[in-house]
Length: 238
Ligand code: SF4
Image 1 (tube, rainbow, N blue to C red):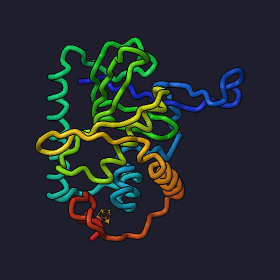
Image 2 (tube, rainbow, N blue to C red):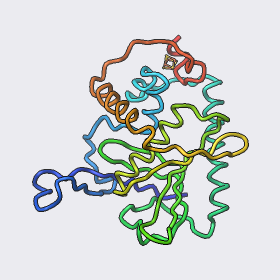
Image 3 (tube, protein in one colour):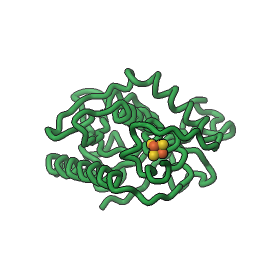
Image 4 (cartoon, rainbow, N blue to C red):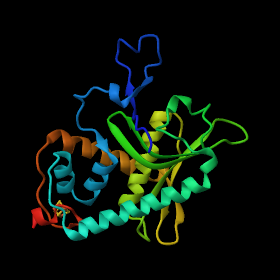
């Protein structure tokens, strides 16, 4: 089991940034993060918002529900696919596995080629990354690529947007471009690349909307939709 130490990137305050580049960021362990900070956009909240604003609202307020059978089955399938995918990857990279949450400050000197169940935060965005592959090219800095495991045989727009979010947050934490995330999906474990550049404009708009949505803290209108059957709040909403 990994020791989970989340890493967070924050912009330096005016006092701290004296003598630094004004765009400097500071990398701090999650535990040192200001606990009063609110409205952190997580991968889960982003995914929920894309499915249904009401679901995102309920998750953000910590609303508990008695999960219906279909939602529980769907979640179990997702978890089981992710666990099996990680197991397969760890077998392939067993010689070079990270044994804990990685420290982005040691990316250049690290020896691991695969890390899994990683969590990073940058500027109130928090990505839960299923796995991370590190490749050392013949020249230049090591490249890291997030991997997202999706049980569906056809990754949805929401899966792709969440994968782009992984690359977006990670690029801020490691302070280098992360061009894409690999989605491994479906029964045949096929791989597709999700390029951040393709989704960046749309993702930025969604993040800004979601920030305003979470800051307003008002419940949205309840609109039943096609995600309802697999939603944990189905019994609450109908
Ligand atoms: S049951 Fe439907 S309306 Fe209610 S939160 Fe879930 S997706 Fe939204």
